[in-house]
Image 1 (cartoon, rainbow, N blue to C red):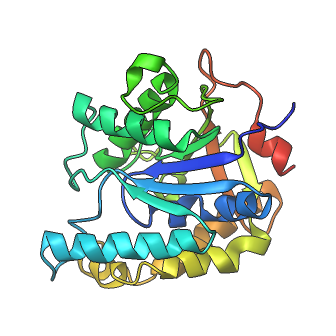
Image 2: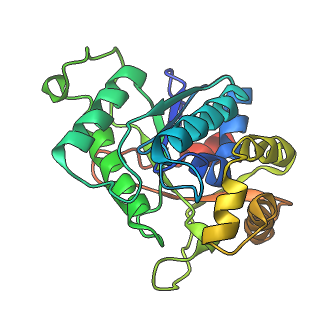
Length: 249
């Protein structure tokens, strides 16, 4: 398998800090290998607070996301939908397709197909739709960039590695992030606004520790100190070979 000549990766997930929890270690490794990094969210995180109004918390959280992306020399994007209202509908799909047209990724990460929150499930559908159709000339008013094609698509781990009915998710791919774990922790720490929100709403005060613990659990499964886990989308017209396994055996 020959890696794509267009070394551009897009992480499109629901909310700011989702990428830092679930895929930042792999993004760090890709950046170290010369890939261009784009981190995007469908919503700005406007419900992730117990004290701010939606506009101020959106400004805070998108600034935090941009700061985290900058740590891998990446670019942050937001489709600017609302928390809790992310929906698989034409306007949202159109915004996602337009983003794909501008970024032109050959590798894409997105939210789990099944997870505890519907925003995540809808984001996985939106990303899947955009990844398939963005290379069609008539799909967007943005110009079609050279090399646009159906990219490699991977779904990130759900929280705690379990689906909404408590069933364990079996990964197709693990990426060793042992050497990247400290930097991943620093990227997640950029999202300082979320500590109090998670304490108030989720009843947890281990924002960074929970991420590191999950990385250790997936690492133990795969023979590493720390790892991230993914499920590859291999439907018709999508690449069937495992790019991540080839890049990071």
